[in-house]
Image (cartoon, rainbow, N blue to C red; front, side, top):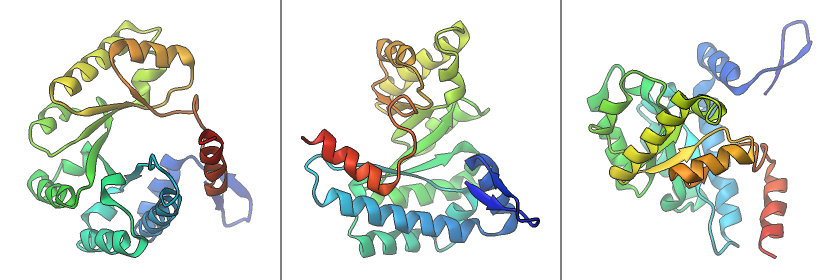
Length: 220
């Protein structure tokens, strides 16, 4: 992310720092709505010409998710962009459920009733992840990259990932490994039964134009 400070010096901030600043400044809701509509529009446009359509995962901030108009905004954007809800995954983190798990559960049920899937991001880093799985309508777990970084060097990290994959399979949940940077990490995860990956080993962040070109290349 690019940010201009008051003295006009240019500073680059990683997403986690940028999001924190946006939430503290009160701009996160506007930014979140912009990202949601723009992403849905772009991927809907790409999917018009694809046989194997792209699934879009949207990471929703706590403040955006808890606003009263979130569901109505989401429905409106899906209609305006003609986006197929079956191609959408809403990602949430377990910090969302600290204060009102019952209320959040009802919102998630409404999201799932629209055909949208729900993913629990950064799984394994919090204190209540296991109990959440029995209470929430979750379709997917995302293994935090902190476990993936050391998976070939740290037996504890490997054991944790192996346990999460086994638990996901038992509960018939999809499981995604985040932060793949090397082929060795992917091969270890494949041996553990994880089949969905995300990370710089495959692609760094792409512009819409570069993503379109990549899909055209792969379809040849």
